[in-house]
Length: 555
Image 1 (spheres, rainbow, N blue to C red):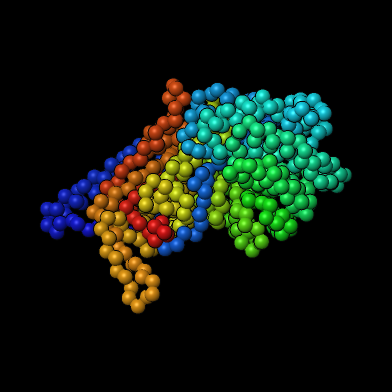
Image 2: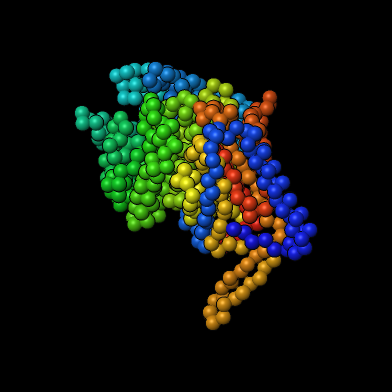
């Protein structure tokens, strides 16, 4: 609850104020209600959001939002559906205006280049003794494809595109080079870094900017396709670190070294971290907690709060492991598509998936994850952009709003009144205030959410009350400003259809124009922050409260 000051005590003034607040309340509901909140007839649930503003519980990167580009060729099919089209790093249309604008809108967007086939990619060079051939379908090969090759012409084109878009690039290197897959499924031998070193050296010579080099994809623990032991992987990560330090020795700043890019296995990760010494900057793990894309119960899982809560164990275990290990490395989600084997059309590329995606972002941030890479930017059935047209899917707009509104510092947030509301809050990115994210998994109930703070202040007039007797004066400040409005961004599905690939913002359809420009994301203004936030059935709301100042956000 935010206290208001500066209002007159006259009856007429009070009457005018109440009329104004009532009009604002009705106006906001009219704008969001017209968009089709999507839920049944339902009643209203009153609840309370509590935000503890004393101390931040986590801190994310400023460019927390990340997306992936993969290697899969058009022939990649799952369950009889071929959903990748021309979205591979080798054939993606780099001249498409929508793709260009979609990336530029983030200013910047982190992009991780990699995926399953990265451990079957070689890099063209004058020392290469084998043909630089493209992937070909072969069912007898691991992952169903032969080895592929990245030409330096294509690498030049990709980097020209990334420079144009301002993207921040992480490149996933082939970690199976030099190894042989054994009968038991393990990959034996040390990593041969020679081809990777050639690519890195070429990249530096050309002046291309790479934010990080990552070693391998899903080879940790039990692995996918094959696996590498933690002790050997640590040795290989040290080798990559030494290569990067050597090649970038004359550079003012050096790229990050990331690994292992696989599924979290506590025992494997513990051994890996204990032996990798200080070679790592980032520990990456992958998330596909919804199961296979063919699963008929994906939506039930997404709408089940208990199921969503399950992934907190992984985030918590990794956070504790990083804190207790000798490494100074930080944690990233290096790849997360929710449902593996390319996702599911009408689910992982539809409005309903924003419930899972935004909940994942909020949960990851709460456990001090610094970056979260979504599988994919484009490709498969889980792209932020449509694989064929590049038109943004609903999750694109969810990601862009997060990127623009949610600041680096994470605040402890809880909701009482319904277990179907997911609540996350950060210090705001656009102000000294706070941004709140509310997700309503209930299709029948509209939620009226009152917001209360611990340690809150309101901007403008400063009344510092210093505690005496303290060697270091601390302020217990109350900051007040008569203007205490907020901005709200209500996201709903077209006609209330959770399978829709059209998202509405405050009742208006979000779509690119004829030039491929990304639409502006405009809020509705609520004149008083004392009004409850109205969260329609099956909807998502970002709430920016610029005039609240919390100790956690002012430090």
